[in-house]
Amino acid sequence: MFDWLNELEKLTLNTLENLQEMTDEQLLFFVEERGRILESIKQTGSDDPNGEQKGFDQNTRNRIQQLLQYDGMIQMRMQAMLTEYGLTFSKVQAAKKQKTAYDLEYTPDSLFFDKKK
Image (tube, rainbow, N blue to C red):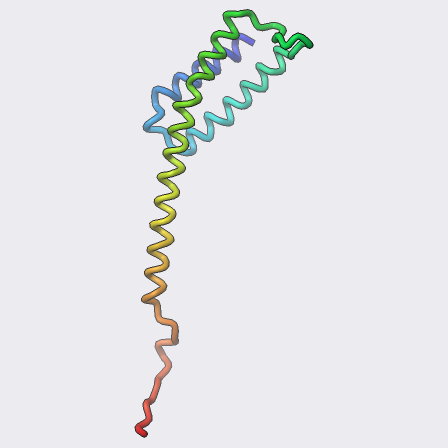
């Protein structure tokens, strides 16, 4: 269990160090890997009827709580990326709309003849 906790600490601290430069794929990897590690930790310490976690001493609980405090910074970065992608998507949609306004809606090979009345 301590190996998992050490791995989680290493993964989280590495993510925090590189948070501003990380791509969306790297953040996705972090989230998936973190989820896998947390599931492993959960299976190690199952809840008893009194609400206490078996197998976790106070030091381990403190380490886990400290790691969970970093979630806010990571979530803020992910939200900023989502907003940025949303703006980019909006710009692309607007560009497509403008482009279609200038596209020809008729076949350029066709001819039109005006008749004088």
